[in-house]
Image 1 (cartoon, rainbow, N blue to C red):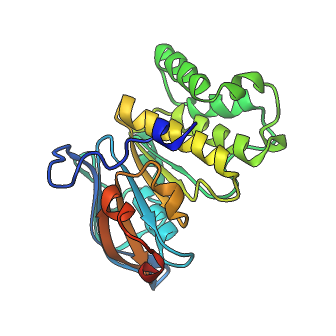
Image 2: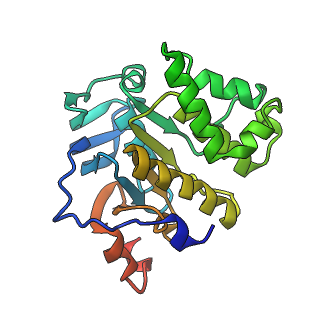
Length: 253
């Protein structure tokens, strides 16, 4: 798929976008134990919006994501998700409310088949109709998962495993999908296919997406807005169009 076939990122400007915020973070401080590594973060993701946090390793991106998801405690500030204060909520609660996080490593159950990985994603869904609809959607997005249904996920290529991880997450019916470095180690053509599927989901189902990336070029394919992190702080917020207009990015990091 070509870039212009898969992406309509940045079409709506911040000034005209009236979609409500699905998640809003104010003055977030986070870290490990008493050591703060994220300082006074303000960010939001609207319903149906794809937002990318970009920055080098060690900038605090993953810490921010894990804290929003509830894997790390909030040391300061607030998190609001779907109108609820989730500042002190654990990951299990947030997951049940529609958050889903795909880490950069160990993102599939390698000893289980592709089918069983996907079934795990819908383990807590009581509606058979919802499960069937999600199953169909995942296989439409990634037909290879239907072809390799009986294959153990751990024996697949890196790109195929990333598709399994996305399928697993989508089977839970998330409202907010969070991905940590989804392009890491993958061939550009595979990244285009995966990012195209994510953009399609946001446009067609209203899925909100928060992506962490070092590769700005790949993130530009789908993100509506960008936050740039450096040394644990947000130093810049720009639309896709504003980021594309930049001739260089090195000064941001």
